[in-house]
Image (cartoon, rainbow, N blue to C red; front, side):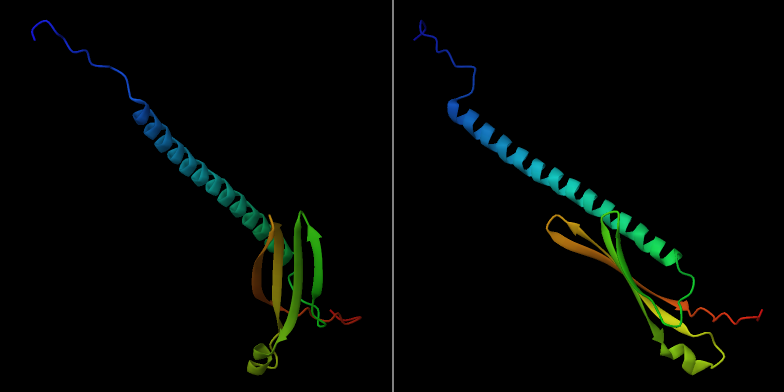
Length: 136
C-alpha cells in the first residue's frame, strides 16, 4: 500500500451547503421581522408624540371655561380632537366663595393603518368670570 495515496476533497458537500443556506435564510427572516417591528414602533411613537402636542395645544388655548361649558371638536394635521366639559360639583361644596371649576375632557385620535388610536387627558379649569358692564 505504499504506492497508493488517498486524496481528500477540500470543498463542502451539497448537503452542507443546503443546510448553511437554510440557516442563513431563517436568520435573515428573523432580522427582517425585527427591523420591521422596530420601524413600526418608531412610527407609532412619533404619531403618539404628535398627538400629545395637539393635546397640549388644546389645553394651552384655554385658561378658563365659560359658564355654559365647552363642547367642541375638529380636525388638524391628520388628527381628530374633541373637548368637552362638565361642572365639577366638589369645588362648590367646600366653599361657596370659591371659583367654580369644570372638569375638562380632551381626546385626540388618529388612524394608524387600519386601527384607531387615541390619547386622552382630563383636567380641572376655573369657570370664566362673567363680565359685568361698567364694573372693574
